[in-house]
Length: 198
Length: 99
Image (tube, rainbow over all chains, first blue to last red; front, side):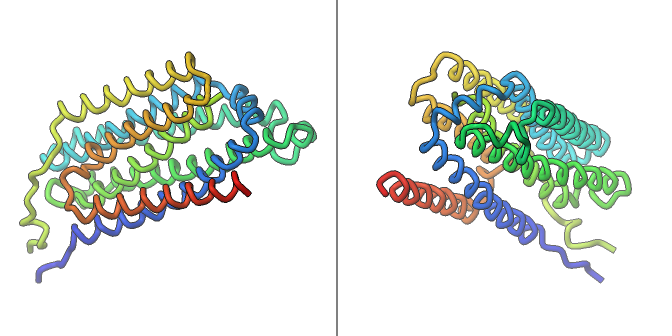
């Protein structure tokens, strides 16, 4: 009995999902752009309160994790399961580091009273309230994507060890890597919009 | 018992050299965008940062996500998404800025 599989269809499904994700994040970027146009001074002031060094470090972390995800796919295609596993593990680890940094960054903001609903927050200029609301929503949804990616990579890592994902059956890893690269691209745009533009 | 996938061609790997060069290019562009943000605070900063971010996204899409090896179908859909988003953004700005 021959088991039917369709790698091209699986990859097409992932690409179509990613296109819906692009439209999803695109809506938030649109909201950001419109409010930035209306409250440019407030957005500039609020952006100055974010730490550029932390944002840059997290960008380097995510770009490097994208590189190791691509490396793991390249390795598994060659049948190098051990090095593919190492690359997968590093990718998940970098994702965890990204989330830890994001957690400390959010904690600092919340510690300063910058969170929706606080007395300090409610007294901020309207444009700043919009900026920080968008900051929490956009980075929060992005962090949720990172968390899902970490879990997926852990499952794939287990599948590599159990032999389900291997040198001639790697579509699950390929799709997981595609998803992770998209998460990287979303951050590539979030980083300058939130941390760099003053 | 072989699945159909056992016969799959495993060629089409991206070389380590290409991946490393792309990674270094992404790090360089990140440094560049941080540097630009430090020295350029005028209104052109938005456009410059978006252009550099799009260059980085292009590298990830075409090398890491291997879009350059995919069929024309995928590239056309990506183009459709980019055009759709651009049109939505342009029409929204026409509405909110000249209301």
